[in-house]
Image 1: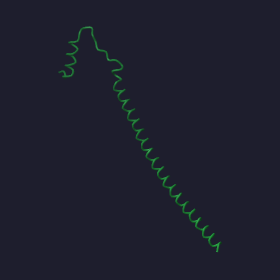
Image 2: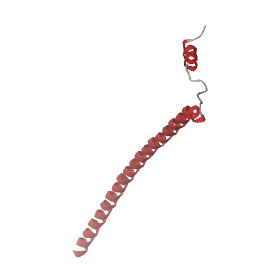
Image 3: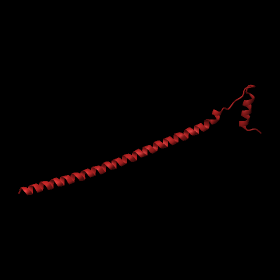
Image 4: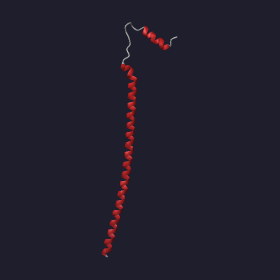
Length: 97
C-alpha cells in the first residue's frame, strides 16, 4: 500500500524523460537555514532598537530631572542674593541715620 504522496512522486518520476534527473543543490538545502539566520538576525537587531529607544527615554528623563534641579538651585541662589541685597540696603539706610 502506497501513500498518496509516494504515489504522486513515483508517477512524476515515471513521466520524467529518460536521462533527465533532478539535482538538489546545496543552496536549496541551506535555504531554510538561511531564512532562520536572517530571522534571528532581524530579531536581534530590532531588540537593539528597542533597547536604544528605552535608553534614550531614560536619558531624556534624567536630563529633565537635572534641569528641574538646576532651576531650583538657581531660584535658591536668587533668593539668597535678594536677601543679601536687602540686608545691605537696610544697613546703608541705618548708617545714614
